[in-house]
Structure formats: structure tokens, C-alpha cells
Image 1 (cartoon, rainbow, N blue to C red):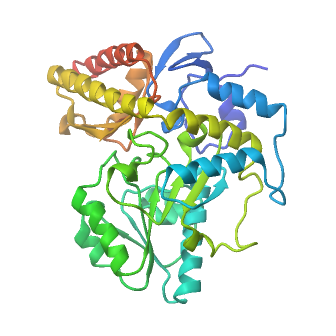
Image 2: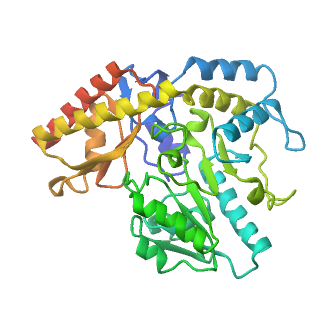
Length: 401
């Protein structure tokens, strides 16, 4: 069997348009394709590979647990799930954890919990969910409807009701639609897919105050920002605001599929036995790997290193921009950095991604106008420097064409 990009078109549903490059192995922050060409990974599987590829702690956890027990139904619990949940509770505001398989599933659980809490405590009238335009919360029908991008939610028939969207960093737009009928306000503490947009201090604290005023739950979608990505264990810790429910995935498993919803005991009690579940959620194999990832990242030295790397990347991107004037803005937190293109290069983010790939560096986009970088949190400085040198070559190729 010839395994190449053409086989994708033959056997896969056409909802993706993957690159012709097929990576076959990775080590640390480097990846090699079928032709043994090497790439420096600044994409991290979309902010998933927090410790790069084949990190020894994750490989060891996978091997050890793989020889013990992989899966149990939720008729029983298991040791890795209990250990991981305890560590997450001890490190955060939360009292209780629910495990799922992905960020979308964690968000689905958060939204269902918010609706159930509101129904139990306040009654049927309190059902409005508010989120923000350009937000992204997953691809299930509920989460894609809550996410503020019509391109992802339109075309599938009637959407779940009582969902409204305000504008990120515009507190007045939220104030105009929030009321005592609002059960939850869901937002990313740094918008990822929407362009790597940080909240202003007034906005994020204002959202918390409005939730308190109207007795609505504040849900933080930390699927992309959580587990060290911003240089805090969770982004809320650097914002001076504590949510009522928080979701985590991506980096939580370091590449192994797992998601989690974190909340308080008072709110959690409304997901009574039988109200929600997941066949694979909290399975021993996923939780063992996630425990190793969580332990490795939840370390003062590692988190401080994320901030150091942020400064280095922003400085080098600014130097590149001084030469080629392609970026209107360089922003983001930790190892989630966005570079917005100038008017001259508007809409060409994918061109920059493709040029970078040719030069041997993997990047991301966040919409048509923003290039996104989400490398490993522990990427060696040498790899970071070499990757940015390659990236400068890609920028030069486009800017001088």
C-alpha cells in the first residue's frame, strides 16, 4: 500500500485539506516527514504538544500504564483518574473534576452543567448563554452554536436556542444583553482561533462583575490557554479573576486525547448520577499520560521558562518586522503568540504558513490575517532561535516577491 497525500483524497471525508507533508516521527521540537526532511515545530499540534514530541515522562507513563490497564467503564473508577483529579483540584480553584476526551466535550459538559444548575436553582426562565463573537468552543452542535463564528455553525439546520453573542473586549455590548435570565457567560481568557486576542483588565473584571450582579456562571474555556500555555498553570491565575467553571484539554494530555471540566462542589452537585457521561472519559491510559504532563508543566521553573521564551519570540519577530514590515501587531501570552498582518498582506496568513513549511518550520494561522505560534513550552532556546531564522527566510521570500 502506498501511503501518501493522494490516499487521503481516496479514503477520507473531505472536511480537511491537509498539507502534502506527512510527518512520521518527532523528537522534542523537531519533526521528520516521509522524505526525512526536518521541521522545527512551532505549531504544537495546535497548542497540544506542550512538551514537544515523545517527551520521556509521557512515553514512560504511556508504556507503564499500557502494561497495566487501558480502559474501564465508569461503573468503576481508576487510580490514574483519581490521582490526576486530586492534583488538579489542589492546584486550582476547583473542588470537583469531570473527565472527557476533548475540549469540545469538556465545553459541552460545562454548558450542560450551567443549564442544569440554573434550572435546579432558579427555574426554567434562566437559560440564556452568552459568549463572544470570534470565540471558539468546539465542534459539537451545542459548542459550535455557542462559539461566535457563523462559518462553523451555519448550514446544519436549527441551532440550540437561548444563545447570544457579545463583542470581546466590549463590556457595553455584554451589558446590553445580560440579564437575570442569563445562566452563563462563556469566554476564552485569550481568544485563540479568533486571532490571539488578550482581554483588557477592565473587560475581564467587568465580565466577572456582571456575572455576579445577574447571578450567572462565568465559564472559562481554557482548552487552548490551560496547562502552562500562557506562563501560568491556567490563564485565569494571571488575570485576577476566578471563573465558576473552567475547561481544559489540548496540553492537558500532551498529545494524548483528554479533556476536563473543573468546578466548585456547590455547582458540581447538579450533575447528579445519570445526568451526563462519557464512555472513554477518565480512562486510565489517558489519565496516566495527562498526570505526567500536568506534573511536568506544574513547575515554577517550567512556567518561568514559558515567559522567557515569550520575550525572546516577540523580540525576534519585532526584529524581523523592522526589516520587512509585514506585521501590524505582535501579541499574545506565553507560548501562544499571534502576528497580525499589515494591510498590504491582509488575507495571506496561509501563504506565510506555506512558505514557512518550505523553509522547515511548522506554524499555524488564526484566521486569514493572523499567524499563530504555539511551540512546546520547553522548546530549547537553540530550536527557537533556529526556527525563527527559518521563519525570517519565509517572510523575506514573501515580502520581496
